[in-house]
Every structure is written in C-alpha cells, then in structure tokens.
Image (cartoon, rainbow, N blue to C red; front, side):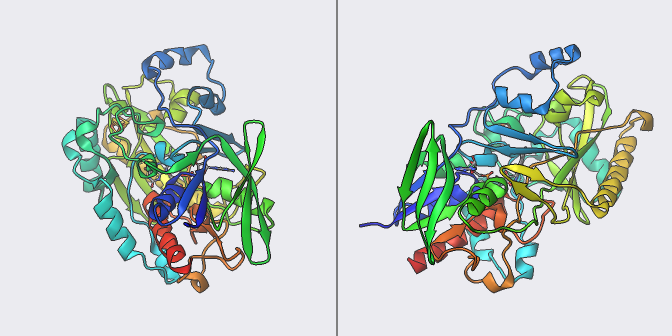
Amino acid sequence: MKKKAIIIGSGAGGAMAARMLAGKFEVTVLEAGKAFKPFSLSLDKLAAFRKTGLYLDERMIQMLLPSMRIDRQKEMVMVYGRGVGGTTTLATGNAVRADEGLKKIGIHLDEEFDELYRELPITTNHQRFWSPITKQTFQVMQEMGLDPQPMPKLLRPNNCRLCGHCSIGCPTRAKWDTRELLKGINVVTGCKVTRIDISGRLAHRVHAVKGLQHQTFEADIIIVAAGGYGTPHILRASGIDCQPTLFVDPVLCVAAPMEKARQNRQLLMPFVSMREKYIISPYMDWLSFFFNRSWRKPMDGMVSLMIKLADVEQGDVHHNRMRKELTPLDHQRLEQGVIDCREILMQLGANPQDIFLGTLNAGHPGGMLPLTSAEAETLHSPLLPDNLYVSDATILPQSLGLPPMLTIMAMAKRIAKNIEKAF
Ligand SMILES: Cc1cc2nc3c(=O)[nH]c(=O)nc-3n(C[C@H](O)[C@H](O)[C@H](O)COP(=O)(O)OP(=O)(O)OC[C@H]3O[C@@H](n4cnc5c(N)ncnc54)[C@H](O)[C@@H]3O)c2cc1C
Ligand code: SF4
C-alpha cells in the first residue's frame, strides 16, 4: 500500500512537491481557496468609475477577484493568492533563478533548476511583442548603463493577447501557473488547515475547516506549503515556533503621464535591470491605478516603472496579520530606486513635476523558518518532526528582491527527492 502524503497549499512550493510525489505516494493537497477564475470584467469600464470616488480601499478587489487577498497595514499593502495555484495565478510569470542566499549556506540546486528549464515553458523570446514605449524604455536604460535584460517568462507567447492582465489572471492560460502541475492530483478545495497533531518526533494528523465542518486527515508525510504568510500561522498553532524574520520584497512604482503610451496593453515586466538590492522593471500597477488618487490618469496615457526591493528580514505574521515596517536602510535603498526611475522617465520625456509614486505594496512573503547551513543536505529544520516538511517561501534564508517562484519550485523538487529517499 502506498504511503499517504498530505500537502497543505497548492502554490509554487505545494504544487511542485505534489507533482514530484504523485504516483509514489497517495497525495492529497488541502487548499484553503477555491478554483481560480481570472478577473473577467472590463478594466476600461471600471476605470470610468474612478471619478466617483467609489474605490476607497484595496481590499475591495477581493469582491471582484476572490483569489486575490489584500492585507492593508500602516505602511504597505500586502497582496497574496488564496485559491488553486496559490499566488502563482497572480504572478506576472517571471522565472528568475534567485538562489544566491541558498548557495551561501551550501545549498546547490543546479540539477533542479536544469529540470525546471526542461519541464516548464520558460522563454525570453517575447521581444517581438514589445510596444514602441517598451522598446524606447529598454533603449534609454541601456544608454544609462542600467543593463536591462529581457525577463525570462513562464509563457507560451503565441497564446498571449497582450491584454496586460498578467497579475489579475491570464484569460488565455498563455501564462503558466502551478495549476498545470496539479492535473490528476486530488485537491480538496475550500479546506483551511488549522493545525497539525504532533507527538514526539512524528506528525500524524492534520486538522482543517471545510465550510462549517471540522475535518481531520491522517498522513505518513505532511508538507506545509501555505506560503510565507500562511505557513507560520499553521506551524505556531501546532507548537512549532517561527522567527520574526519576515521579508516581503516591497514594491513601489514610479510613473509619469505619457500620451498614448499604451503600457496597459503589454506583458507586465518585459525586461529587468538588476541593481544592488533592488530591481527596476516596467509594470502597470493596477492597485495604484484604481486606489491611489495620484493615479487618476487615462489608462493608456502613462508609463510606470517598478522598484522591487530586497528588504531587511525583520517582521512577523500573527493570526494571519502582517507586522512589518521598513527599516531606514530599506527606505534609503527605495529612495535610490526612485532617483533611478525618475531619471529614466525624464529621459523618456516626462516633466519632473508630473512624476508620481504608487502605493507601497508587497507580494513575496517568506523567511520565517529560514534554512541554515546545518540543513544544507536535508532542507529540513530540526524544529520540525521527522515526517513534517516545509516547502515554500518560509524556508528561504534571505530576502530576494527578485521573483521567487522558480527558486521555491527548485527547493520543492529537492525536498520531494529527499522525502522519497527517506520514506
Ligand atoms: C501580483 C504578484 C505578482 C507576482 N509575480 C511573480 C512573478 O512574476 N514571478 C515570481 O517568481 N513570483 C511572483 N510573485 C510571487 C510568487 O507568486 C510567490 O512568491 C509564490 O507563489 C510563493 O509560493 P509559495 O508556495 O510560498 O506560496 P503561494 O504560492 O502563495 O501558495 C500558498 C497556498 O497555500 C494556501 N493556504 C494558505 N493558508 C492555508 C491553510 N491554512 N490551509 C490550506 N491552504 C492554505 C493558499 O491559498 C495558497 O494557495 C508575485 C506575487 C504577486 C502578489
Ligand atoms: S498579457 Fe498575455 S500572458 Fe499576460 S494575461 Fe494577457 S494574455 Fe496572459
């Protein structure tokens, strides 16, 4: 008889672990959210209502796109996915190898990255779709010595309609997400895990709420992959402590009016410039467009650049609420990013007085049970029972300031291989 593996969460880490173990184990994925449906209303029509002042709070998005969750706090807005595919359904499809921090502690995932490059539709062959403003921005950044590079994308370019909806759900499935890994796997949706029973060095039962019912699931192996936001909560409720080392990779957009730029009809983040501790990439920021008053410009009449920062690993999640404040060093680095972006926009012809900022937000939570060099072989924290693994952004040893999906999937592959050997 096959051993039973329960996997909690169907995002980058959970779905990849499930795919790897399926067949050898009897795999069940418990997912708090429901099936993902992309945002289907017309953005043009919704934009027309901005004048009415009806769009008061970013959390209103959840009514229109239930798989997108927003946690608003003093300094920033946290965005994450709650549905089959996790946050990967909201991702812009960037597939970047970001394992510097892992290498530093002796974790080398070359084999797993090679597998990912073979198995997934990763491409940089999308320049032929770039619009005039994207090409112009690329050129300006080249001339400024910012070394922009086409972004590797999880994308089937021929199916892309250039609708610019990547971060609110791809209508054509041109953009790959982890739902593709879950085909044929038993996924229990609407099933929110509350805690895990542990005795001695073994975890043996998962408690969950599905609708109004309390349910339990027995398992030989349990993998927690509820994301950097959800996993610490489950671990703590099960008696395993985490560290206040949350990182989130904050994002700030810098934008300017530019007539007929049509950046809203582009792949998001088509290229990237890697700076020290942050990246810069063109990005139409829908959150700011709808909810930030400074963004009351026509949808096709602006250019926006994203700064994504590798923040200091300092913060916590309590009862699914984030506690995170940027440090003076974070602010200093963000400020440098704003200076770079202002210069790019001015080179593109923007008037310095017209440049405006977006809403500070973040979508890469992780780091609260960071791996250390002592776990370089096992990728398994000694704080966990022998048959309980964490396979998501929670175990990343440091903030990335880069898209983390590919790296999380590489770790999930190695974890699944280790489980196969051990059980
Ligand atoms: C707008 C946006 C764009 C992004 N773009 C990119 C990109 O282009 N490239 C990239 O690499 N990264 C991108 N990211 C980040 C990336 O999507 C995440 O870092 C990655 O998906 C995290 O993987 P994970 O496995 O840690 O968690 P998630 O993918 O968030 O998966 C966690 C899953 O666990 C489920 N869950 C949570 N709690 C429970 C519970 N109690 N019980 C059961 N299930 C639970 C959730 O519903 C979710 O499905 C983006 C993020 C955002 C917000
Ligand atoms: S721009 Fe292309 S990849 Fe992005 S959502 Fe639209 S069709 Fe999908």
